[in-house]
View 1 (tube, protein in one colour):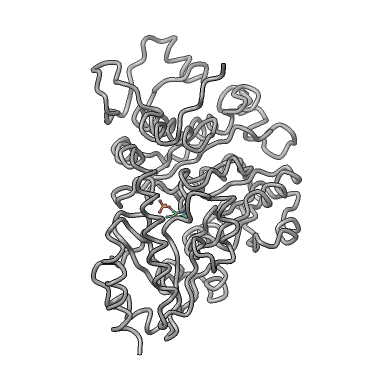
View 2 (cartoon, protein in one colour):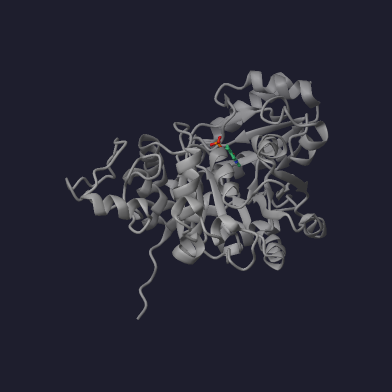
Length: 429
Ligand SMILES: *Cc1c(COP(=O)(O)O)cnc(C)c1O
C-alpha cells in the first residue's frame, strides 16, 4: 500500500521543521550563527569537497534557512530549493547557473517592472541578453528561442495586470527546444499554482510578498524541479562539465536531480553571496504556516472588490482573472484553480490625473510599492514601479497611465469598498 502524500496544509506547517535535536524546541530556532564547528579534520574536508552535506558557514547554508528551503521545495513539489536575499537575487541566481556571456533569456513582456529593468538593462553587464515577447503568441515565443537561448522566463500570474500564463503551452515549446522554463510564482504562491506540474524547470519567488505575508522581510527562493536533463546537450557546462573550483566535479553527474540546487549553493551563494539571513527565514517560515488560509481570504476579498469596481460607472475596466469577464478566466481553472490571487488593476475613465488623485484620497489602502501584505495596498504603476519603462512597455505590462494597481489584503472587504467609493468620489468628475 502506498502512503497518501501529506496535504498542502500539513506541509506548510511541518515540512522542513522537526523538534530541535539539542533542545527539543518545537518551533524552528533562529540559528543566529555565522559558522558551525566541524567534528574533526576529515569532516571538514568532506564538507568542503561536497562529499557530505552539512553546515560550514552561513553564506552557504544555515539550519533555519535550510528548514525554509525544505518547506519551499515540498510546497512546490520540487527536488530542492535555494533561498536568496530577495526575489531579484533569486532571479539572478537562477540565471547564473545557466547563462554565459553572449547567451540570452527569452522573457514574457508581462513581468514585474523591476524584472523588466533587471533583464533589459542590468544583466547586459554580465554579457547576458533578454528578448521580450508576448507569451500568448506561441509562434513568437518559438521564433525568439535560438541556439544561444539558455532559459525562458515568465510569471504564472503576471504582475500587475491579472494575466495568467498558459504554462502548459509554454512548457511544450521549451521542452521541444530543450531549454529550461523558469516561472516566477510570486503572485500565485504554491497554494494557487504549482508550476512544476505544468512543466516548469525552476520556480522563483519573491518571498517578500504573500509567502511571508505581512510586509516584514525581503527574501527570495529558487525551487528546482530536478527534472531537467542538464547533460542532454553541451549548453549548460556549469552543470554538466567539470567544475575547476571543485577538482573537476561534474554537478549533474554527481548530484543528479539536485544538480542545480547544489550548484546554486556551492558556486552561486559561495561567490555571489546573495544569502538569506536566518532571521528573515524565520519570519518567512512563520508566514508560510498560514499561507493557505490567507490566500483563500485574499482571493475572496479580491473577487468582491473587483466585482464592485467592475459595476462602478467611474471605472473603465478591471483586469482580474477571477472575474468571468476576464479573457484569462478560462485559463484560471487549469493553471490556478484555487483562485486568481489578490493583485489586479483597474482603469479610470477620467485618466491619469484621476488615478493620482484617487491614490491621495484613500484612507485604508496604503500607498506603497509592495504587494501580498495583510494590509490592502494601492499604487499607480505607471508613475512608480513601471516608471523606468517606455509607455509601450507600460501598456504591454498592463500598467498603462490610466491604470491603478491594487493588492487586496485581509481586512473586511466592505470597508475596502467603502474606502474606494469615497476616494473615487473625490477623484472623478
Ligand atoms: C517583488 C517581486 C519581485 C522582486 O522581489 P524582491 O523581493 O522585491 O527582490 C519579482 N517578481 C515579482 C512578481 C514580484 O512581485
